[in-house]
Image (cartoon, rainbow, N blue to C red):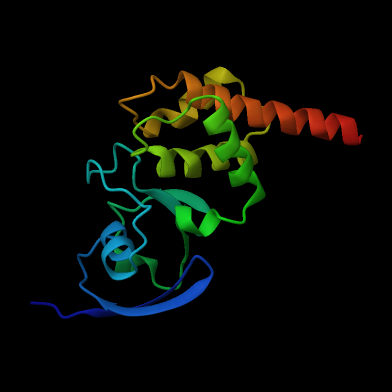
Length: 164
């Protein structure tokens, strides 16, 4: 039987060192060892997107990522976006557009939505829906979520035009 492995990474801007089992998933490490429970676990197969967080600046499914594979990485969970302007815009839009109901998918949806806003500033409804296809929601029907992301994108495009 293999022993624990040393893991050194940055989580929400803070250095973290821990000994972890080689087969422990990042989601379990984040939740159980660091008590950052905003990262939700749904399907445990990388399908539902509830566990989505940022890994080295990109959305990643933490339920299928081994913690030891993240040695040296920078991880940002939903808790790490408290002072993020883009996330603040999205949270406000999600609330205004009724883009949340039970809230289970919301952290993963917000991380993915932030990526869409920053990476695809010209995204239309079809592209937003395509980008969200890896995040499942059983409550909202996606209409409010898509509207919220589109609202943030439109406000940013308007702001860019007004500034020019």
